[in-house]
Image (cartoon, rainbow, N blue to C red):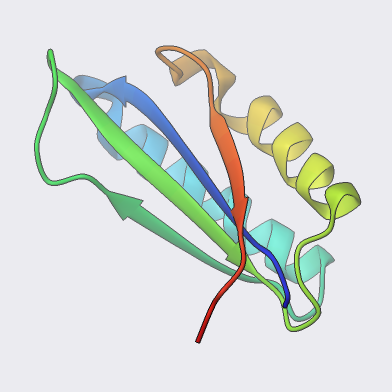
Length: 97
């Protein structure tokens, strides 16, 4: 089964608009550079201690392998590091259905 990548992290609510723009730009660039890559940006609806939790998802027909996951993470750190309030948590899951 092709693995999908899920990445979640927290940012200050005050920075949310800037982070949203930067994350969407990041995903657009990644999808352009990796044909077939699909990306989505999600937000947890509630705040915790004035921070928003965002989740990036990545999928590709033949899966997100370790090399692609590393490329995504390197690009994300370069683009988003200044806003992160803690680590980015990267996890890979496989669909069951």
